[in-house]
Length: 523
Ligand SMILES: CC(=O)/C=C/C=C(C)/C=C/C1=C(C)CCCC1(C)C
Ligand SMILES: CC(/C=C/C=O)=C\C=C\C=O
Ligand SMILES: [Fe+2]
Image (tube, rainbow, N blue to C red; front, side):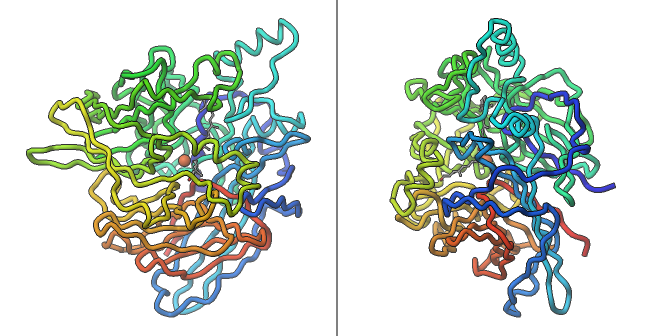
């Protein structure tokens, strides 16, 4: 049986029934894929199946770092449907990109690539009707005209059926090697949408963190509770379809939970962030946009970090912290001793939600070369475990090291929840309106090394360890790049030196995308 993968719908996981089997629909490539970096829309028709692509020559010293396996990346690749053009980067219908590397001992190497739309119900309905039908990140469908339809709309909002199931953020292989969890199941070879996941529990959860943490043994995620403001921390064992509640964290500020795109874990704890960018219940109920789409920015509500023990479900620390704005958490670890604490790192936007507006598509397309990317840093929280009411937030290294911009991070997964040294992220070479470098951040030396190519927009640098590696940075970093001329390639960097090993050219432009995963090949 082919390995299946989980695509985590962002963030609506409401299971939907479907009358047509996704398999019965031939794949079609509607709309266009706009490489946001170049601002061009490439309308060349392409089959979804493999296109021959070549690996550039490798300098001999890098041969032992040649990857062997498949990289799959997800992201919002289609921003136009019918006459409708989406407004925000996060609205686009999910597009998968796959690059399969076949390293050969003693010489050559080959790689093939493919891309394909995910057939979520949101995507299928939009294609069928020639306009978006469900609520996307920045788009609310027009309210129904008749009273009956309005009742239908309200039911849709309450049950979550009106919210998107467009899974445009992450793609995760489940640790059980058996099957996949979450809303959309993907065949990693053909990228075909092969089914939908149904939880067997009754936790509901219209909305969940876009970045569940998946290991060989478990799947951890957070479910926001908008009725009694708080978060459920839930766990699903590998091989099970049933999420179980570990515990609940009550919100300390605001009328609703903070947006939780991602979160962090240590070996013993789950860290639940609560930032002032909070779900807008009014927006969700009235289907009207809030100042930040589905969110309000409520600085007066405060910022907090909660730490829950994974084994007991008890909240062992709940501290107020300086205001913060973070979409992505990098990693966390425990510090023992007299001053026991949990250290949590994130891509922090100086407590400023402006990054959300920066990602509006017409700004990305029209402000190229203008220095309008808001500053960001590696924000390091220290959460004391001695009952103190406050936690600290400091800047982990001089942000000039990464051009005062940073987001879209990865680490060596072997360091998850443990003390670590290296983070990989997209950084900035200014002036720019979007992260345009790949950066390797050394959190011990407090230095960064960067890769940059004029006019190119690289996506998240994804770390893949070398088989048998023991050093934290022994491996490669993979990123899919949209180049200035609208073309696209997958880039492989040596994670130690951060020098280029190879690039795999796609014979056509690729859309910008978000997060990827790695499926090791057979040796
Ligand atoms: C891709 C990414 O980073 C974020 C995407 C976020 C989405 C699609 C969020 C959607 C929504 C909420 C966060 C709250 C409920 C409404 C809805 C618009 C589905
Ligand atoms: C692309 C992005 C932030 C860039 C900031 O500099 C965030 C994407 C989030 C999706 O997962
Ligand atoms: Fe993300």
